[in-house]
Length: 330
Image 1 (cartoon, one colour):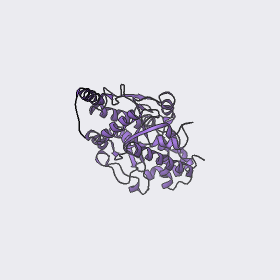
Image 2 (image 1 turned 120 degrees about the horizontal axis):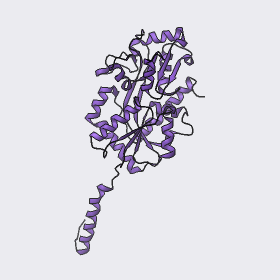
Image 3 (image 1 turned 90 degrees about the vertical axis):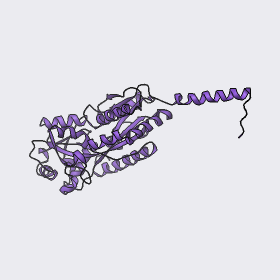
């Protein structure tokens, strides 16, 4: 194509140059980036918000700092309703999510809410489930715990950071099925708002065991408060988690991986959504995040945008079928 620059041509070229120069400034950037952790401090959602938020800041992907807001209640339902009903068009907001989120959605536990009311941003890894007891407990293995439940179901209560019927609860029921417990409804599960509170109740002696995820348990293991009797992974994890025995090596075929990621308000603009998809994707690809994953027992799960949306939809469908099989929903 031939370019000719007369007076009018120069004016046009100048205008085009101005538009091109102005282009980058028109790209979306959050003014007050915020991450909602749908539970009290100390659990997996809180971990996800704070660690990803810090990495976003360290990599210079957000202006300033990422504010973390804890909104506990309803196994994540209070936060979900807040986003859908009050902050549907908030472009500065992302919300920590996990298998617990898809579990509650699959079971219709967020009244009037569905996964299609929000936009699913990206995953940042998968967190294998664990079952633990207090450090001074006489129980040393998962079969020992299950045998005690078989002998006297009322003698064992198990705490978790998700609501009844949530992912933490399901992990215990799957383990019980693998151990030959026919009526899993006899399992005493006590729900708390977040893993931190659930471990506190274990240490207080209110319950006899705890179910959660490797990342949220590590700090309590390091402090000497709890001991992990089973990690629900196909083989032992690496690094600091290599000492955790798997359920599989103890003769129980139980695999339970809790994905971790984010959703955003359903009314978020495409520009903002693409920004967050890209930003979280850059976090996942960074050396900083690889180190955090290694330190906290996170396994790889690299999904963004449409791929993550499809993954969550499949997860919801799978958990709905499982919940029907064990009688949690009709």
